[in-house]
Image (cartoon, rainbow, N blue to C red; front, side, top):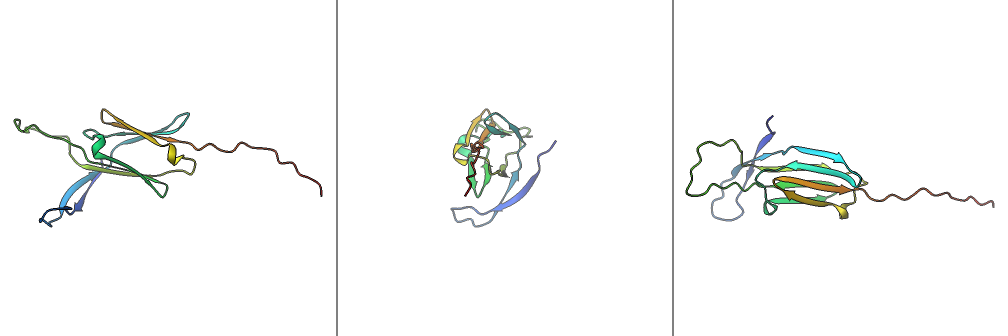
Length: 132
């Protein structure tokens, strides 16, 4: 199954070349499942390191952006390539019961895990009605 991709034009931030560069942006496969603590988001991001990964929360939206670092040693030459080196971008609207301050993430062997913990909810309590 192929991953949806779309070309995105970017302009180099520095240098004299003002010609836009076309880079492919892909949507990585994501699994989201429920745990005792909240939701766990798992993304398959081969070739991505922590330096090439950015997670951001703004206006109740979690955004993942990254750039894989695939390098071929200078003494070797590429004969066949199936792994596409493309940036990735994925956004999710978070529910109101996600504790934004408690979100944690770890990247291990190309798999990103983001824990989206639930906020603690107030326990129901009985309100005594007084006669007046």
